[in-house]
Length: 382
Image (cartoon, rainbow, N blue to C red; front, side, top):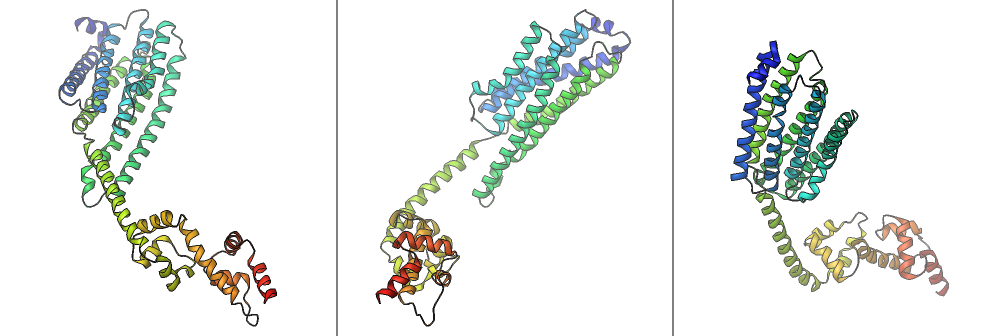
């Protein structure tokens, strides 16, 4: 510590302040790392967060190294190399964010690919210190972080919409983690963006005459890290994914029960003369008839009726209803009164079709002849 103070000359107060808060931050990170490894390592995102904390803790040794190496000849090279290491830590935060929003979805090998560009840049600069490497990594990080944040926020929105659509009563209380996950993603993105911008000034940490500014900024950064790491840590040790898995299991059980009920009700429907009911009540004359509306009229369930039509009749709903409409249209043509004639469009509408082109196409497909030709042949044979 005395060596550092001597090196910093008149800036020793700010150097001491930076060393003090860097030490506190470093201890905080190590303690959190140990606690998570020993007690909260059940989920993948917790283990990834622990690794991220360790990487970040090593990164906070940078402040001590930079202070000690201020006057050596290759100080700028060391500084850039340390900053590139910090980008490796940002890659860890990206991996952590993915595992937080998508627990156990990706294998470790897949996630480690995120670190590959940063590791490549670090090794490349360590062996061939090309100045363009550092700004390229900065641009890549800002772009990647932005895309990742947008994707994760959309994923969270999708999860919330799914849970809202499939949950009832107070069940949303069972999924509090999805609500704050978005906050954490935004927080981590904001911190990474601020650090990436701030690192532009840190690039000239050794050559700038304004050492006090850099020392103060780094001290403030320690305070920011202490706060946001504490927030993430508190949430991570409380994070649970069992409720979501339970919901999935419950949905699967409900689906199986519905399938069994559907099979039972299907047997009941097959023993009921649905065709006769539809013909007698002429439900098909409704031009805007839907599956749900017909199910309500028949006093049954939409899914049950759909299963009946698909499995028993081997038709879609509209093919099934159009069969009745074609019968009605043929009946109108068979009873055609030349004294009070209808146009083909009127017959189409009277039969329940809401489109003449659909009527014409369906009639030709079923009877092999157009409605007008059918009427002409009938009149000529009469």
